[in-house]
Image 1: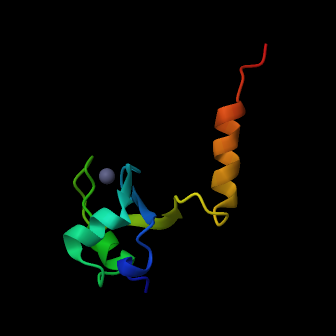
Image 2: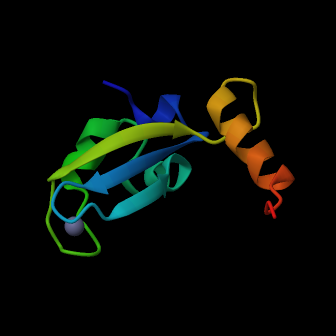
Length: 88
Ligand SMILES: [Zn+2]
């Protein structure tokens, strides 16, 4: 299990299993609220969907949002955004 205290630079991406509502939670903010000993799995179980109100029925993903070379895919997406020009 991944404790929040080991991933303070990352985000928790939670998708509701019922309505597919998507939420991004800053791990640093979660640590401030629930403590660093809480695991990402526990947060998932306690998370309530803001759209339909269902609790615990969701999937989660830990997302790296820093600027280091770890997130290769993210870097590609970002550079696409900056260089994007509509084709005519
Ligand atoms: Zn929902």
